[in-house]
Image (tube, rainbow, N blue to C red):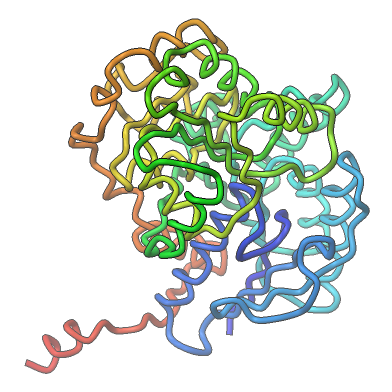
Length: 392
Protein backbone atom coordinates (compact mmCIF):
# COMPACT_ATOMS: atom_id res chain seq x y z
CA UNK A 1 0.00 0.00 0.00
CA UNK A 2 1.23 3.48 -0.90
CA UNK A 3 1.09 5.95 1.98
CA UNK A 4 0.50 9.63 1.20
CA UNK A 5 0.60 12.29 3.94
CA UNK A 6 -0.94 15.70 3.26
CA UNK A 7 0.53 18.71 5.08
CA UNK A 8 0.08 22.49 4.93
CA UNK A 9 -3.59 23.14 5.65
CA UNK A 10 -5.78 23.62 8.71
CA UNK A 11 -8.09 20.64 8.18
CA UNK A 12 -11.26 19.37 6.51
CA UNK A 13 -14.18 19.24 5.78
CA UNK A 14 -15.78 22.53 6.91
CA UNK A 15 -12.65 24.50 7.75
CA UNK A 16 -12.56 27.91 6.08
CA UNK A 17 -10.01 28.52 3.32
CA UNK A 18 -9.31 27.82 -0.34
CA UNK A 19 -6.68 25.15 0.31
CA UNK A 20 -8.97 23.48 2.83
CA UNK A 21 -11.83 23.41 0.32
CA UNK A 22 -9.45 22.15 -2.37
CA UNK A 23 -8.33 19.20 -0.24
CA UNK A 24 -11.82 18.44 1.09
CA UNK A 25 -12.97 17.98 -2.50
CA UNK A 26 -9.85 16.49 -4.10
CA UNK A 27 -8.68 13.84 -1.64
CA UNK A 28 -11.90 11.77 -1.52
CA UNK A 29 -12.09 11.92 -5.33
CA UNK A 30 -8.54 10.55 -5.56
CA UNK A 31 -9.41 7.65 -3.24
CA UNK A 32 -12.54 6.94 -5.28
CA UNK A 33 -10.32 6.22 -8.29
CA UNK A 34 -8.13 3.53 -6.74
CA UNK A 35 -8.87 0.03 -5.56
CA UNK A 36 -9.21 -0.57 -1.79
CA UNK A 37 -5.86 -1.15 -0.10
CA UNK A 38 -3.84 0.59 -2.84
CA UNK A 39 -3.52 4.09 -1.34
CA UNK A 40 -3.80 5.42 2.20
CA UNK A 41 -4.14 9.20 2.60
CA UNK A 42 -3.47 10.80 5.98
CA UNK A 43 -4.02 14.52 6.53
CA UNK A 44 -2.09 16.13 9.38
CA UNK A 45 -4.41 18.95 10.46
CA UNK A 46 -3.98 21.75 13.00
CA UNK A 47 -5.38 21.04 16.43
CA UNK A 48 -7.07 24.43 16.83
CA UNK A 49 -9.32 23.71 13.84
CA UNK A 50 -9.77 19.93 14.12
CA UNK A 51 -10.31 18.59 17.62
CA UNK A 52 -10.31 14.83 17.14
CA UNK A 53 -8.70 12.11 15.08
CA UNK A 54 -11.24 10.77 12.60
CA UNK A 55 -11.85 9.53 9.09
CA UNK A 56 -13.32 12.05 6.63
CA UNK A 57 -14.63 10.51 3.41
CA UNK A 58 -11.90 7.88 3.47
CA UNK A 59 -9.12 10.28 4.50
CA UNK A 60 -7.59 9.71 7.93
CA UNK A 61 -7.26 13.08 9.66
CA UNK A 62 -4.93 13.53 12.64
CA UNK A 63 -4.80 16.84 14.54
CA UNK A 64 -1.27 18.01 15.35
CA UNK A 65 -0.47 20.83 17.76
CA UNK A 66 0.44 24.28 16.36
CA UNK A 67 0.81 27.67 18.08
CA UNK A 68 -2.11 30.09 17.62
CA UNK A 69 0.02 32.90 16.26
CA UNK A 70 -0.37 34.15 12.65
CA UNK A 71 3.38 34.21 11.97
CA UNK A 72 4.33 30.96 13.71
CA UNK A 73 1.34 28.67 13.20
CA UNK A 74 2.09 27.44 9.68
CA UNK A 75 5.84 26.94 9.92
CA UNK A 76 5.82 25.27 13.34
CA UNK A 77 2.97 22.94 12.37
CA UNK A 78 4.72 21.99 9.13
CA UNK A 79 7.92 21.18 11.01
CA UNK A 80 6.14 18.95 13.52
CA UNK A 81 3.99 17.35 10.81
CA UNK A 82 7.00 16.40 8.67
CA UNK A 83 8.69 14.73 11.64
CA UNK A 84 5.44 12.95 12.51
CA UNK A 85 5.03 11.77 8.90
CA UNK A 86 8.57 10.41 8.76
CA UNK A 87 9.00 8.81 12.17
CA UNK A 88 5.45 7.97 13.32
CA UNK A 89 3.51 7.33 10.13
CA UNK A 90 6.58 6.14 8.18
CA UNK A 91 4.99 7.58 5.10
CA UNK A 92 6.21 7.05 1.54
CA UNK A 93 5.14 10.37 0.05
CA UNK A 94 4.27 13.87 1.27
CA UNK A 95 1.94 16.28 -0.51
CA UNK A 96 2.82 19.77 0.73
CA UNK A 97 0.41 22.66 0.12
CA UNK A 98 1.22 26.41 -0.18
CA UNK A 99 4.46 28.38 -0.25
CA UNK A 100 4.60 29.04 3.51
CA UNK A 101 5.03 25.32 4.27
CA UNK A 102 7.30 25.25 1.20
CA UNK A 103 10.06 26.75 3.37
CA UNK A 104 10.53 23.26 4.83
CA UNK A 105 10.80 21.45 1.50
CA UNK A 106 14.59 20.96 1.98
CA UNK A 107 13.91 19.37 5.36
CA UNK A 108 11.42 16.97 3.78
CA UNK A 109 14.12 15.87 1.35
CA UNK A 110 16.69 15.50 4.16
CA UNK A 111 14.21 13.20 5.90
CA UNK A 112 14.17 11.04 2.78
CA UNK A 113 10.59 11.85 1.79
CA UNK A 114 9.30 11.94 -1.78
CA UNK A 115 7.73 15.37 -2.16
CA UNK A 116 4.77 16.63 -4.22
CA UNK A 117 4.08 20.35 -3.85
CA UNK A 118 0.98 22.34 -4.81
CA UNK A 119 1.38 26.09 -5.31
CA UNK A 120 -1.94 27.74 -4.45
CA UNK A 121 -0.90 31.35 -5.06
CA UNK A 122 1.78 33.97 -4.45
CA UNK A 123 0.93 34.58 -0.78
CA UNK A 124 3.69 37.20 -0.47
CA UNK A 125 1.33 39.55 -2.33
CA UNK A 126 -1.11 39.58 0.58
CA UNK A 127 -1.39 42.96 2.28
CA UNK A 128 -1.17 41.53 5.80
CA UNK A 129 2.49 40.54 5.51
CA UNK A 130 5.41 42.83 6.37
CA UNK A 131 8.73 42.94 4.46
CA UNK A 132 10.35 40.06 6.37
CA UNK A 133 7.32 37.76 5.98
CA UNK A 134 7.13 38.58 2.26
CA UNK A 135 10.81 37.72 1.89
CA UNK A 136 10.32 34.41 3.68
CA UNK A 137 7.29 33.50 1.57
CA UNK A 138 9.26 34.21 -1.60
CA UNK A 139 11.96 31.92 -0.24
CA UNK A 140 9.30 29.31 0.45
CA UNK A 141 8.18 29.46 -3.18
CA UNK A 142 11.76 29.12 -4.39
CA UNK A 143 12.70 26.27 -2.05
CA UNK A 144 9.50 24.36 -2.77
CA UNK A 145 10.09 24.45 -6.53
CA UNK A 146 13.78 23.59 -6.22
CA UNK A 147 13.42 20.71 -3.75
CA UNK A 148 10.10 19.08 -4.69
CA UNK A 149 10.05 16.11 -7.01
CA UNK A 150 6.86 17.39 -8.70
CA UNK A 151 5.12 20.79 -8.59
CA UNK A 152 1.43 21.49 -9.28
CA UNK A 153 0.03 25.00 -9.75
CA UNK A 154 -3.70 25.76 -9.65
CA UNK A 155 -3.23 28.72 -12.01
CA UNK A 156 -1.80 28.44 -15.57
CA UNK A 157 -0.17 31.87 -15.29
CA UNK A 158 1.69 30.71 -12.18
CA UNK A 159 2.91 27.60 -13.99
CA UNK A 160 4.29 29.74 -16.84
CA UNK A 161 5.94 32.16 -14.40
CA UNK A 162 7.63 29.37 -12.43
CA UNK A 163 8.75 27.54 -15.58
CA UNK A 164 10.38 30.75 -16.80
CA UNK A 165 11.98 31.45 -13.42
CA UNK A 166 13.22 27.88 -12.88
CA UNK A 167 13.97 26.57 -16.40
CA UNK A 168 15.90 23.55 -15.10
CA UNK A 169 12.78 22.48 -13.16
CA UNK A 170 10.26 23.36 -15.89
CA UNK A 171 9.52 19.74 -16.79
CA UNK A 172 8.48 19.04 -13.18
CA UNK A 173 5.91 21.88 -13.08
CA UNK A 174 2.35 21.17 -14.22
CA UNK A 175 -0.90 23.09 -14.08
CA UNK A 176 -3.90 21.32 -12.54
CA UNK A 177 -6.79 23.70 -11.73
CA UNK A 178 -9.13 23.96 -8.78
CA UNK A 179 -12.68 22.74 -9.28
CA UNK A 180 -16.20 23.53 -8.15
CA UNK A 181 -18.46 21.58 -5.84
CA UNK A 182 -21.27 19.53 -7.36
CA UNK A 183 -23.02 19.13 -4.00
CA UNK A 184 -26.70 19.91 -3.74
CA UNK A 185 -27.34 23.31 -2.09
CA UNK A 186 -28.86 23.42 1.39
CA UNK A 187 -32.63 23.20 1.58
CA UNK A 188 -32.68 25.34 4.74
CA UNK A 189 -32.00 28.54 2.84
CA UNK A 190 -35.48 30.14 3.34
CA UNK A 191 -34.85 30.35 7.10
CA UNK A 192 -31.50 32.05 6.55
CA UNK A 193 -33.00 34.52 4.06
CA UNK A 194 -35.75 35.36 6.51
CA UNK A 195 -33.30 35.75 9.41
CA UNK A 196 -31.38 38.46 7.54
CA UNK A 197 -34.40 39.96 5.72
CA UNK A 198 -32.97 38.98 2.33
CA UNK A 199 -35.02 38.82 -0.84
CA UNK A 200 -33.98 36.22 -3.38
CA UNK A 201 -32.37 37.90 -6.38
CA UNK A 202 -31.93 41.21 -4.53
CA UNK A 203 -28.59 40.89 -2.82
CA UNK A 204 -24.92 40.95 -3.76
CA UNK A 205 -22.82 38.13 -2.31
CA UNK A 206 -19.07 37.82 -1.75
CA UNK A 207 -17.38 34.76 -0.25
CA UNK A 208 -13.98 34.77 1.42
CA UNK A 209 -12.04 35.13 4.65
CA UNK A 210 -12.10 38.56 6.29
CA UNK A 211 -8.58 39.54 5.32
CA UNK A 212 -7.34 42.63 3.44
CA UNK A 213 -6.44 40.85 0.18
CA UNK A 214 -10.09 39.84 -0.28
CA UNK A 215 -10.93 43.59 -0.52
CA UNK A 216 -14.29 43.38 1.25
CA UNK A 217 -13.79 46.99 2.37
CA UNK A 218 -13.57 48.12 -1.26
CA UNK A 219 -16.73 46.19 -2.11
CA UNK A 220 -18.59 47.80 0.81
CA UNK A 221 -17.60 51.28 -0.39
CA UNK A 222 -18.62 50.53 -3.97
CA UNK A 223 -21.92 49.00 -2.88
CA UNK A 224 -22.77 51.99 -0.65
CA UNK A 225 -21.91 54.39 -3.49
CA UNK A 226 -24.06 52.49 -6.00
CA UNK A 227 -27.80 52.76 -6.62
CA UNK A 228 -28.48 49.21 -5.42
CA UNK A 229 -29.38 50.19 -1.80
CA UNK A 230 -31.84 52.75 -3.21
CA UNK A 231 -33.89 50.20 -5.13
CA UNK A 232 -37.24 48.95 -3.90
CA UNK A 233 -36.82 46.69 -2.08
CA UNK A 234 -33.28 47.82 -1.19
CA UNK A 235 -30.52 45.46 -2.24
CA UNK A 236 -28.21 44.15 0.46
CA UNK A 237 -24.59 43.10 0.50
CA UNK A 238 -23.93 39.66 2.01
CA UNK A 239 -20.36 38.74 2.97
CA UNK A 240 -19.78 35.07 3.81
CA UNK A 241 -16.65 34.21 5.76
CA UNK A 242 -14.73 34.90 8.93
CA UNK A 243 -11.19 35.64 10.07
CA UNK A 244 -8.76 33.01 11.38
CA UNK A 245 -7.40 35.39 13.97
CA UNK A 246 -8.76 38.57 15.56
CA UNK A 247 -7.67 41.58 13.48
CA UNK A 248 -8.29 45.30 13.09
CA UNK A 249 -9.43 44.66 9.53
CA UNK A 250 -12.14 42.17 10.55
CA UNK A 251 -13.28 44.49 13.33
CA UNK A 252 -13.53 47.41 10.87
CA UNK A 253 -15.80 45.35 8.60
CA UNK A 254 -17.97 44.43 11.57
CA UNK A 255 -18.24 48.10 12.58
CA UNK A 256 -19.35 49.07 9.09
CA UNK A 257 -21.97 46.35 9.05
CA UNK A 258 -23.35 47.51 12.41
CA UNK A 259 -23.79 51.03 11.01
CA UNK A 260 -25.51 49.93 7.79
CA UNK A 261 -28.51 47.58 7.84
CA UNK A 262 -27.93 46.72 4.18
CA UNK A 263 -24.56 45.08 4.91
CA UNK A 264 -24.79 41.55 6.32
CA UNK A 265 -21.82 39.61 7.68
CA UNK A 266 -23.04 36.02 7.72
CA UNK A 267 -19.83 34.56 9.13
CA UNK A 268 -18.74 30.98 8.49
CA UNK A 269 -21.50 28.67 7.22
CA UNK A 270 -21.50 25.11 5.80
CA UNK A 271 -20.54 24.73 2.14
CA UNK A 272 -24.05 23.64 1.12
CA UNK A 273 -25.38 26.88 2.60
CA UNK A 274 -22.82 28.89 0.62
CA UNK A 275 -23.95 27.16 -2.57
CA UNK A 276 -27.58 27.96 -1.76
CA UNK A 277 -26.81 31.61 -1.00
CA UNK A 278 -24.99 31.86 -4.33
CA UNK A 279 -27.94 30.44 -6.23
CA UNK A 280 -30.43 32.85 -4.63
CA UNK A 281 -28.28 35.98 -5.05
CA UNK A 282 -28.61 38.66 -7.70
CA UNK A 283 -24.86 39.07 -8.20
CA UNK A 284 -21.61 37.45 -7.01
CA UNK A 285 -18.58 39.74 -6.64
CA UNK A 286 -14.96 38.74 -5.98
CA UNK A 287 -12.92 41.97 -5.60
CA UNK A 288 -9.68 40.28 -4.43
CA UNK A 289 -6.20 41.68 -4.83
CA UNK A 290 -4.82 38.15 -4.65
CA UNK A 291 -6.10 34.65 -5.48
CA UNK A 292 -4.70 31.31 -6.56
CA UNK A 293 -7.69 30.14 -8.56
CA UNK A 294 -10.86 31.00 -6.68
CA UNK A 295 -13.08 28.03 -5.88
CA UNK A 296 -15.70 30.53 -4.64
CA UNK A 297 -15.82 32.14 -8.10
CA UNK A 298 -16.05 28.77 -9.86
CA UNK A 299 -18.94 27.72 -7.63
CA UNK A 300 -20.75 31.01 -8.28
CA UNK A 301 -20.34 30.48 -12.03
CA UNK A 302 -21.68 26.96 -11.68
CA UNK A 303 -24.77 28.33 -9.92
CA UNK A 304 -25.53 30.48 -12.97
CA UNK A 305 -25.79 33.88 -11.24
CA UNK A 306 -24.24 37.10 -12.60
CA UNK A 307 -20.54 37.34 -11.70
CA UNK A 308 -18.07 40.23 -11.37
CA UNK A 309 -14.37 39.61 -10.69
CA UNK A 310 -11.32 41.80 -10.23
CA UNK A 311 -8.97 41.61 -13.21
CA UNK A 312 -6.03 39.89 -11.48
CA UNK A 313 -4.32 37.12 -13.47
CA UNK A 314 -5.87 34.28 -11.46
CA UNK A 315 -9.38 35.57 -12.19
CA UNK A 316 -8.60 36.28 -15.85
CA UNK A 317 -7.44 32.65 -16.12
CA UNK A 318 -11.07 31.57 -15.65
CA UNK A 319 -11.72 32.97 -19.12
CA UNK A 320 -14.83 35.14 -18.76
CA UNK A 321 -15.70 37.94 -21.20
CA UNK A 322 -14.13 41.32 -20.42
CA UNK A 323 -17.44 42.75 -19.18
CA UNK A 324 -17.27 40.38 -16.18
CA UNK A 325 -14.10 42.03 -14.88
CA UNK A 326 -13.25 45.38 -13.29
CA UNK A 327 -9.85 46.96 -12.53
CA UNK A 328 -8.50 45.60 -9.26
CA UNK A 329 -8.56 48.13 -6.44
CA UNK A 330 -10.88 50.59 -8.21
CA UNK A 331 -13.92 51.50 -6.10
CA UNK A 332 -15.11 53.86 -8.83
CA UNK A 333 -15.06 51.25 -11.61
CA UNK A 334 -16.71 48.64 -9.42
CA UNK A 335 -19.46 51.13 -8.55
CA UNK A 336 -20.03 51.72 -12.27
CA UNK A 337 -20.31 47.97 -12.80
CA UNK A 338 -22.84 47.66 -9.96
CA UNK A 339 -24.94 50.45 -11.50
CA UNK A 340 -24.99 48.81 -14.95
CA UNK A 341 -27.48 46.19 -16.14
CA UNK A 342 -26.54 43.17 -14.01
CA UNK A 343 -28.02 40.80 -16.55
CA UNK A 344 -24.97 41.59 -18.70
CA UNK A 345 -22.90 39.55 -16.26
CA UNK A 346 -24.97 36.37 -16.34
CA UNK A 347 -23.50 33.09 -17.37
CA UNK A 348 -25.21 33.04 -20.71
CA UNK A 349 -21.55 33.26 -21.63
CA UNK A 350 -21.16 29.63 -22.66
CA UNK A 351 -18.14 29.34 -20.35
CA UNK A 352 -16.66 25.85 -20.49
CA UNK A 353 -16.37 24.61 -16.90
CA UNK A 354 -15.62 20.99 -17.83
CA UNK A 355 -11.89 21.30 -17.06
CA UNK A 356 -12.80 22.38 -13.50
CA UNK A 357 -14.39 18.99 -12.75
CA UNK A 358 -13.00 17.45 -9.54
CA UNK A 359 -13.15 13.93 -10.94
CA UNK A 360 -10.86 14.83 -13.84
CA UNK A 361 -8.65 16.90 -11.52
CA UNK A 362 -8.34 13.88 -9.20
CA UNK A 363 -7.30 11.59 -12.05
CA UNK A 364 -4.62 14.04 -13.18
CA UNK A 365 -3.34 14.52 -9.62
CA UNK A 366 -3.28 10.75 -9.10
CA UNK A 367 -0.97 10.47 -12.10
CA UNK A 368 1.41 12.90 -10.35
CA UNK A 369 1.27 10.80 -7.18
CA UNK A 370 2.12 7.69 -9.22
CA UNK A 371 5.14 9.47 -10.75
CA UNK A 372 6.25 10.38 -7.25
CA UNK A 373 5.88 6.76 -6.13
CA UNK A 374 8.14 5.56 -8.92
CA UNK A 375 5.79 5.49 -11.90
CA UNK A 376 4.01 2.23 -11.13
CA UNK A 377 0.25 2.71 -11.63
CA UNK A 378 -2.05 2.02 -8.70
CA UNK A 379 -4.87 -0.43 -9.35
CA UNK A 380 -7.95 1.49 -10.41
CA UNK A 381 -11.57 0.90 -9.55
CA UNK A 382 -13.24 -0.39 -12.69
CA UNK A 383 -16.43 1.48 -13.57
CA UNK A 384 -19.44 -0.86 -14.01
CA UNK A 385 -19.99 0.02 -17.68
CA UNK A 386 -16.28 -0.57 -18.45
CA UNK A 387 -16.41 -3.98 -16.74
CA UNK A 388 -19.45 -4.98 -18.80
CA UNK A 389 -17.70 -3.90 -22.02
CA UNK A 390 -14.61 -5.98 -21.17
CA UNK A 391 -16.80 -9.09 -20.70
CA UNK A 392 -18.65 -8.57 -23.98
